[in-house]
Length: 79
Image (cartoon, rainbow, N blue to C red):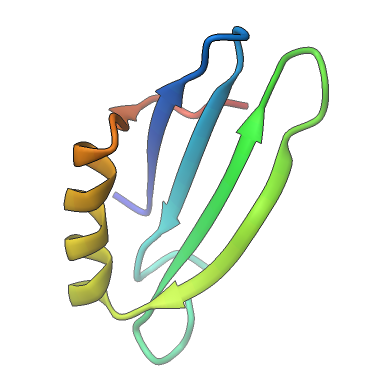
Protein backbone atom coordinates (compact mmCIF):
# COMPACT_ATOMS: atom_id res chain seq x y z
CA UNK A 1 0.00 0.00 0.00
CA UNK A 2 1.56 3.28 -1.09
CA UNK A 3 -0.63 5.61 1.00
CA UNK A 4 -2.29 5.31 4.40
CA UNK A 5 -4.85 7.68 5.93
CA UNK A 6 -5.57 8.08 9.65
CA UNK A 7 -8.59 10.18 10.66
CA UNK A 8 -10.05 11.54 13.92
CA UNK A 9 -13.52 13.13 13.76
CA UNK A 10 -14.07 16.53 15.39
CA UNK A 11 -17.16 17.89 17.15
CA UNK A 12 -17.73 20.51 14.41
CA UNK A 13 -18.24 17.89 11.68
CA UNK A 14 -14.72 18.14 10.34
CA UNK A 15 -11.79 15.84 10.93
CA UNK A 16 -8.10 15.84 11.67
CA UNK A 17 -6.10 13.61 9.36
CA UNK A 18 -2.65 12.16 8.85
CA UNK A 19 -1.61 10.88 5.44
CA UNK A 20 1.43 8.63 5.09
CA UNK A 21 3.15 8.06 1.77
CA UNK A 22 5.24 4.93 1.93
CA UNK A 23 8.19 3.62 -0.08
CA UNK A 24 7.44 3.00 -3.73
CA UNK A 25 5.30 6.10 -4.08
CA UNK A 26 6.76 8.83 -6.35
CA UNK A 27 6.71 11.42 -3.56
CA UNK A 28 8.56 9.16 -1.10
CA UNK A 29 12.00 10.31 -0.09
CA UNK A 30 14.74 8.46 -2.03
CA UNK A 31 16.42 7.49 1.27
CA UNK A 32 13.44 5.25 2.13
CA UNK A 33 11.70 7.64 4.49
CA UNK A 34 7.96 8.04 4.96
CA UNK A 35 6.27 11.35 4.17
CA UNK A 36 3.99 12.30 7.10
CA UNK A 37 1.35 14.96 6.38
CA UNK A 38 -0.91 16.30 9.17
CA UNK A 39 -3.92 18.48 8.52
CA UNK A 40 -7.59 19.17 9.13
CA UNK A 41 -10.63 19.27 6.89
CA UNK A 42 -14.08 20.84 7.31
CA UNK A 43 -16.13 20.32 4.13
CA UNK A 44 -16.80 22.19 1.88
CA UNK A 45 -13.62 24.15 2.68
CA UNK A 46 -10.22 23.22 1.30
CA UNK A 47 -8.12 20.95 3.54
CA UNK A 48 -5.67 22.73 5.83
CA UNK A 49 -2.11 21.41 5.86
CA UNK A 50 -0.59 21.75 9.34
CA UNK A 51 2.69 19.81 9.09
CA UNK A 52 4.72 17.95 6.49
CA UNK A 53 7.55 15.81 7.81
CA UNK A 54 9.71 12.85 6.80
CA UNK A 55 10.43 9.96 9.17
CA UNK A 56 12.19 6.63 8.96
CA UNK A 57 9.76 3.74 8.50
CA UNK A 58 10.53 2.54 12.04
CA UNK A 59 9.74 5.91 13.62
CA UNK A 60 6.58 6.24 11.52
CA UNK A 61 5.33 2.92 12.92
CA UNK A 62 5.87 4.13 16.49
CA UNK A 63 4.05 7.38 15.70
CA UNK A 64 1.11 5.38 14.30
CA UNK A 65 0.70 3.81 17.75
CA UNK A 66 0.55 7.33 19.19
CA UNK A 67 -2.12 8.22 16.61
CA UNK A 68 -4.26 5.28 17.73
CA UNK A 69 -3.87 6.31 21.37
CA UNK A 70 -5.05 9.83 20.38
CA UNK A 71 -8.26 8.54 18.77
CA UNK A 72 -7.16 8.33 15.12
CA UNK A 73 -8.37 5.35 13.07
CA UNK A 74 -7.33 3.99 9.67
CA UNK A 75 -9.59 5.45 6.98
CA UNK A 76 -10.34 5.78 3.30
CA UNK A 77 -8.91 8.95 1.70
CA UNK A 78 -10.58 12.08 3.08
CA UNK A 79 -10.48 13.99 -0.20
